[in-house]
Length: 100
Length: 131
Length: 87
Image (cartoon, rainbow over all chains, first blue to last red; front, side, top):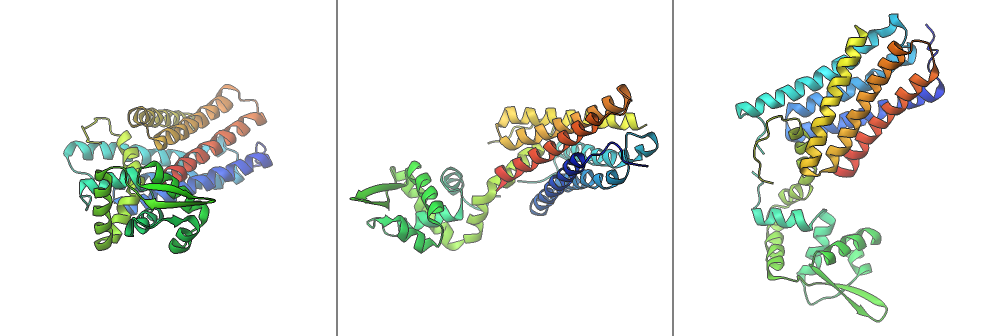
């Protein structure tokens, strides 16, 4: 299926999106290495998945019904964020979590 | 937990934002009677003049270093405005001598603290934390 | 199904944005502001998709252009926040 909705500009911007989220993912992983709280590991992976979502989007147009499976990446990324938020709240209540 | 005394921590948090700045301060502190020109400082610390200039401005603004003029030349010397500041430098210098890496960690800790604040923002039940 | 996912993502994004903005109001730390704006952008990204595909199903170029722009801005804003606040 032709990616008819994608112009060179949108391809470019998609690349910007991917690069910046990949860089942010690396920063989150850096922080995780230092602080060792899985909150940052999860956010790092969320950013990475958001970045990776761009790749299939080069080839398919998600506006077309049959291609809407691409959303699975986005969903995964936000599930990771949700897990991170829930996990950090539960850890706090139990009193465990990162000691500063 | 921090590895250094609260006084050192607070002093660094208020006055030192890079290792370069610390080394400039300690260079001047070594002999308070000496006045240094920017070019000499740049040579000793092996940094760029612009960078050193910025650090010195910050140190002057923080009340640790004083400037002087000799005709055309601008000089800098160690001149803390209060005893407390001087005490802070003395202790910091001692700590830097015996635990250099720890002090460097303290200088760059704000970055980690900011990320920890990022994480705290997602906590729904706020616990009372001392700032 | 896709609609449900985009709606969920929009809601979660908004939630994150609100939490981070609240944190910014409390601690006045710029990193929280930038990351909050990033999540606002991500929420908008999902909302625009919803509008583009569900509400206005006729194919137009503007939808994907707006989405791409907002998405890129979100990424840039977050990275900007990291670089200026952490280095």
